[in-house]
Length: 297
Image 1 (tube, rainbow, N blue to C red):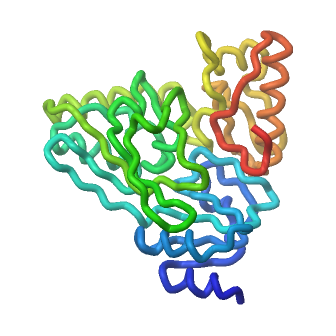
Image 2 (cartoon, rainbow, N blue to C red; image 1 turned 60 degrees about the vertical axis):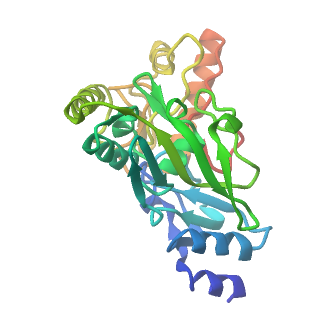
């Protein structure tokens, strides 16, 4: 046994050859060589220090924006779901990276705070939401984010102001090799019931227009400037198209669903088909929003 693996077991849970299909919302992906869930931020810092530099790391929240290959991941998957402390101080909300975004909206409503209602419709955690500047319904993380804390590869925690992150559409610039461990948001005081009503409306719209009854990874592609990926994919005649156990949703063309024991390779083949078909017909190269692990972007 590697000495550093023994160290990981003292500051969290470490499992070998854990299938990633059990940890992604698409339900696909081969085994992680090591799957580590730290008990707290100190445990995560210890892991960043002791894991050899040549061993690749993959942070994982809910796995809602990730397509791992069928061959799995040859390094350490860092399951950050245990880092889930949340605190509200007047109009400031502080959340660790493993807090689910849907929980943030419930806490915000309970305190009569507005600004993050869209998070109720995003199936992920705060860490991933910050890292990709998640958004929906005209809102995004950058609108309310004031500062974050990241852990560097040397185990040190660094505080960064939102202005340092160069946030744009589905993009946040983080220091090389660092992971988001916590975030702080400045929200607006309002009536809690009005926040809950906006959340209900967003969820109703989402349920009506998206295939929430089937395993999926959320929006597959970023919307190109001035257009929508779903419109382009549907116009290319791909709505409902199937490869293997995966298909482009006949409810929303920017969703790929796992409706028949799909493999990652099935999903990836649909992604490539959509890119090639849309580019050939409209001259637009769709950029994936889902992270294609082990694949060029």
